[in-house]
Image 1: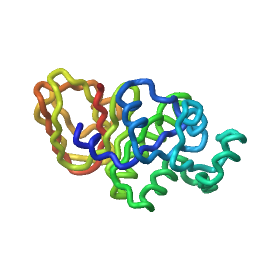
Image 2: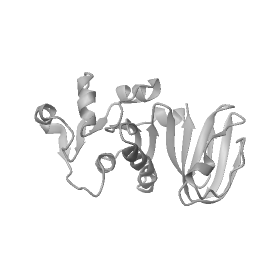
Image 3: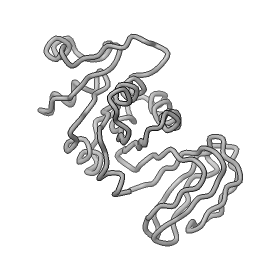
Amino acid sequence: MSDFIDNIEAVILANGDYPSHQLPLQILHSSEYVVCCDGGADTYIEKGFVPNAIIGDGDSICAENRARFSDIIFFVPDQETNDQTKAIDFLISKGYKNIAIVGATGKREDHTIGNISLLVDYKRKGVDVRCYTDYGIFIPCKDEITMSSAEGKQLSIFNVNAKSFSSEGLKYPIYDFTSLWQGTLNRCTSDSFSIKAKGEYLLFIAY
């Protein structure tokens, strides 16, 4: 997982709760390119930072910042996608492929679920993306993966459309989950784990 952090090219700050955990804060504040989703810019600017771009439909950012930073605001009125997706598409258009998302959870649970579920769509676009919350990391996955970890590390697997699940290095056996809760609350039994499957799923690893 540290390899991904070392290779992050850009960070999206969504309009959920501003990060409080050290890791997403470090990723956000050390990034060379930060895109804020509309109202997420207000808090970022309030804390003394200036984003490289602000993306959205303009319905959340305050009037003062809308005027002050008009040269870096890119209004996208399309209501068929959310601001996080607009930020992803903006970064893809600029050639960024290794992207971290922070601030995507909190405030409203429906927005949280929507933001997390979209990670799989972004992977389909060819983006290597991870969402860092104050409690862990969401990673969209496909087919077989192997990751370094630590004994006792907690994780959950949310199936999207995958079949033929199997694993090594996990305490509880996994199978072709048909409900979201079925793959939750597993844990690592060694310093790495592997998941084999055919299809897409979402992995959450707690800090």
